[in-house]
Image 1 (cartoon, rainbow, N blue to C red):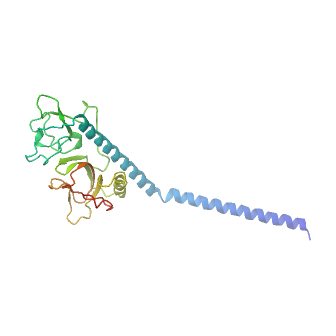
Image 2 (image 1 turned 60 degrees about the vertical axis):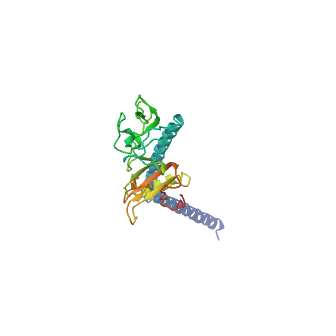
Image 3 (image 1 turned 90 degrees about the vertical axis):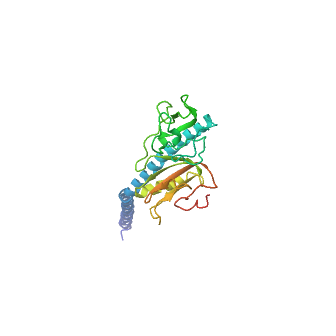
Length: 251
């Protein structure tokens, strides 16, 4: 019996077996890589869109909050001439904070009423720019060096409420892309409970939902709204809670 030949044969068989194992491992790794590149491509795109949307909204939220806080710090007495009664004005506004840009308070101001509630048209009360006490400079303008860019893709421009319930600003969208809802949920997680909420009217029995106790504002039917509070009157404010239901106990 040729033991040396048998030994060489066994070694060759062993080497072939080892090589086969390595080949199988390589095939398995190649298959895993193929799956990772092929199957989750839509998931990767969705994740990227979620992150992009969340970051864009957060950036504008921070700019708006900073502008409002600066207004309050620079002019702590606000504006005692703000008229709280006529239609068009928010009832019982907080006079230290920017009021509705379409308020009748600005009827005799220069520039006049904006015709909308857009945050980009906010003015800081307490800083009259002329002898007319109703004239206030825009917060976002070339004169102040502060600018608020267009709303993120798929969302409407931010609007502001200043009235009996407190002060908040919000944006809305009627888009149904899955990443939009995911982005708002992630954004909501960045805030304390009751500081912000996601309002979903896509399956609301009554459609639109009120944003304030006087029914001046609503989150329209078939929309997602995201609201950030600046100050709250817990005795009257309407708090819808976020879609996940983890803030349902807010006043």
